[in-house]
Structures are given as structure tokens and as C-alpha cells.
Amino acid sequence: MAGSEINNWRAVEGEVRRRIHSRIWKPGELIPNEADLAIEFGCARATVNRALRALAQSGLLDRRRKAGTRVALHPVGKAVLDIPVIRQEIEEGGFRYGYRLLHRATEQAPEGKLNRMRISPPRPLLHVVAVHLADQTPYVAEDRWIDPTVVPTALSAPFATISANEWLLQHTPYTRSDIDFTAVALPSEMAQILGAEPQAAAFLIARTTWDSERAVTAVDLYYAPGYRMKTRL
Amino acid sequence: MAGSEINNWRAVEGEVRRRIHSRIWKPGELIPNEADLAIEFGCARATVNRALRALAQSGLLDRRRKAGTRVALHPVGKAVLDIPVIRQEIEEGGFRYGYRLLHRATEQAPEGKLNRMRISPPRPLLHVVAVHLADQTPYVAEDRWIDPTVVPTALSAPFATISANEWLLQHTPYTRSDIDFTAVALPSEMAQILGAEPQAAAFLIARTTWDSERAVTAVDLYYAPGYRMKTRL
DNA sequence: TGTGTTATTATGTCTGCACATAAAAGCATG
DNA sequence: CATGCTTTTATGTGCAGACATAATAACACA
Image 1 (cartoon, each protein chain N blue to C red):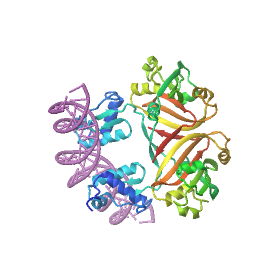
Image 2 (tube, helix red, strand yellow):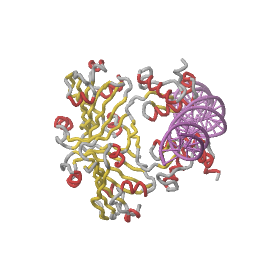
Image 3 (spheres, rainbow over the protein chains, first blue to last red):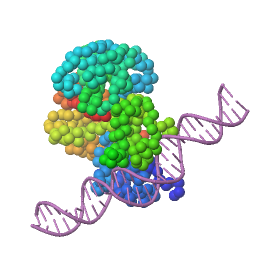
Image 4 (tube, protein in one colour):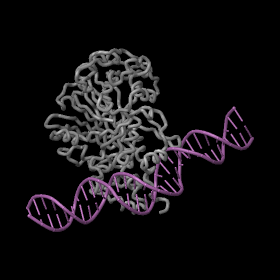
């Protein structure tokens, strides 16, 4: 019995996982409270708490004060997803990363973008179009609008060699962002950049980045057809 | 000074966020160690630890033993993503959830699926095709293969009223799964189910679920064109 | 019977302390 | 000068005990 003691939170997590897995505790069912589990496992309540909290975060348990802890009804819930940081993604795939700036101008943004960035009296924005390459072949096309009133220094930034993405990461304060994942038919302009068929189904990540209440930038990332974003949970 | 004390981990988290945001601590830079921060904030080191751990998990900090804690170079990294649980997703959108079974038979699976499920001597699998409705309109088409040797009871389960998804959640042990997100041109069969144009760009979630080393089921979820999966970070 | 108040209870969090462990930096040795 | 051991240090984790908070359950009263 000595070797099988459960006195660290990972062991507790494992044991709880096992009981859920083996249906000793069934979905929707209430599990014993922290104090009892602590006694059973022979460890401190804080340790049990740590484990249960981790399990709740990964979506396997539902916890509510006073109501207790129960096995989640929908075990498939949350996943920690690595939002692709393009350069990394390409280099991790074993390819040489390349970047090419295709367009850069201050111009009137289409209404859709203005709405997305909640800019109400329309004003000209910095428009950057570029392509990221994996070993010379187009990987993702980037269509970005930047509000120069929020990031004035962007106007003097040369996006020729460094991607706007990386420049912004280094030169703007930390921000929140909204991300949408969709499938779209490739607009002909983007198709041309990617060397793909127009209207082909493309994976699109649309990200809008906020500094408090003001939109810093809105990007559309059109991935070359065939792209898959992978996770496990 | 009394009202602004930082004595709970959320306050610590907030303060650290603020300092990163306002570039007091710049990307890549080392921040003070836990003990010092604890003294500065007037709280226990465990409290600082809790906050920094949370920030590290959300990708804002990089921590390594002995090396210390530094502001992440690529603040845009990880997001906790809610993997859509279809029924919930529909009901949360304010629609009435509906489900219709379209096909259900034990048959030979195409090679692609067998590979995905790592089934080497081909054997017949249970094939279920269904559609999930939001207020009568097709929301997502489900194309699922189940290995009856792993879940024998599935053969006697009537998937007429309850979706295979929910049935499996309730009747299989807890499992891991691989999830891929892609854009595809709608196969004509799925297009018909969804009442959409064939070849239209559709968001596809492909999930393979494992019980240890054996594939329980492989699903393809074809979302009706226009679908957006949203997150923020 | 319905409703508002109170008690109970399970989780949430803080404190202060201790020891474990990984990794960097320094030191010694060949 | 390279290599391997030792020290130092920052994070990781453990414990016991206490109080906070939210939400259910029980109760009393109109």
C-alpha cells in the first residue's frame, strides 16, 4: 500500500480521471466533496482543490459553490488551442519561412472593415497586403488594416522585411482580440496571391485586435487550400 | 493607500496585466521574482504564484524554473476554445434544437476513414448520417463512423431521437480526441442535406475519438456555409 | 400555500511555512 | 580549455488552518 499513495495533485487528478473514465463516477453525478476526498487520499484539501480545479478547467468537471462538484455532462468542451503564430508554425513544420509585402498604402477602408473596427466617422486606414511563404510556396495571405490614429508609428514602419504581425506585437501595448474562424470561397485577389483557384474553399482566420476600446488592427488571414488547424483534447 | 491593496490573486493578475499592457515590463523582459512581488504587493508568495501561473497559462508569461518569469515574446499564443457542443451552441443562440437521423447502417468504411481510425484489417463499421437543425433550418451535417468492436452497445442504440454525439458521450468511457478544423468544398451529398450549393465553402470539424489506443469513432461535421467559430483572447 | 429570512454547507481563497526540483552559474580539476 | 561537480536560486508543490462567499435547504410567518 505504501507505493500507491496519492499525495500530489497530479496523482489526485489522475485518480479522478480514472474514476470518471471507468464510470465509477458517471456523467452528471455528484462526486464526494473536497474534504472527504482529502481524507480518502490522505492529502490536504488544498491538494484536492488544485486537482479538481484543473479538471474543471479542462472541462471534465462542473463545479459550483455549495452545489458541489459533478462529472460534466458534456465532457467534450474546452480545448486549449494554439493560435497559429505564422512564422513559428512554418518553421516548426520544417520549412524555411519567407515573407513578401505586396501592397502598402493609406486608403479608405471598405465599410465592412470599418464596422468590424467600430470606426464610425470613416477615416483612411493603413492597408497592408502580404504573403507568408513556406519554402517559397504561398502559405497564407494577409489582408490587414491598421488604424494610424491608434498606432501612429506604424506609418513610418517599413513592412518590407518584417511582417506587420510581428511589428505590431513588438510595438503595441498588450491587447485583447476577437478571433473568428470560418470557411470562405477565395476572393480572386487572394487566390492569385496564393496561386490557387478562385472560389476554392479556404480557411480564414479573422482577427480584430483592441487596445481597450479602440481597434488597433483587423486582419484576414487566408490560408492556402488544404490547410488544417489541429488540436487535441 | 488603504483601498488599493493587492491582496487577492485576481488583483495581482490585474496589476501584472496592467504593467505588461503599459509596457512597464516589456516583451521578453524578466519580471521580479515571486518573493519580491509578494513583498511589494503585501501578500503571500502563494498568491503571487497563483496569479502568475494563470497568466502563464493564458500565454502572457513564460516561466521556467530558476530562469525566472518573463513577458512572453508572442503574446498571441494560446486561447481556450470552446469546442462546439452542437445542441448547446444552437440553444444558446436562441434557436430550437432539432435532430434528424438520415442514415444508419453497418457497412464497409472508405479507406480514408479506416486510416484515420488506424483500423488495419478492414472491417465493417457503423455508419450514421444525421443533421442538426436550428429552428428547422439545417445547421450542421454529421457524418460519423463508429467501431462496434469498441462500443458493441452502439449496435442496439436507436439514434433516431438522440444524436450519436450525445449517446456516445453518455455511453463511452472518457476519451481523448484529435480535432482538425478545415475548409472544404461541400460534397454534393452534404450540400443536399444542408440545403446548400455543392462545392460551397464549408467549415469542417473532423474529430477522431480514442479509447486509449483504439478509435471509438470518427466524425466529420460539415457546418452550413456562413458558420463562424468565435473566440477571444 | 407562498414568501422572505436564516442556517448550513461546499467551494474559493489567503496565509505562512517547508521542502522538492530544475536549471543556471560558478568552481575545480584533468 | 573543456568537462563535470557543486552551489545557488527561482519556481513548483505540499501542508494545516482560517475565513469568505455563494447557493441550497430549512424554517418561520403571513
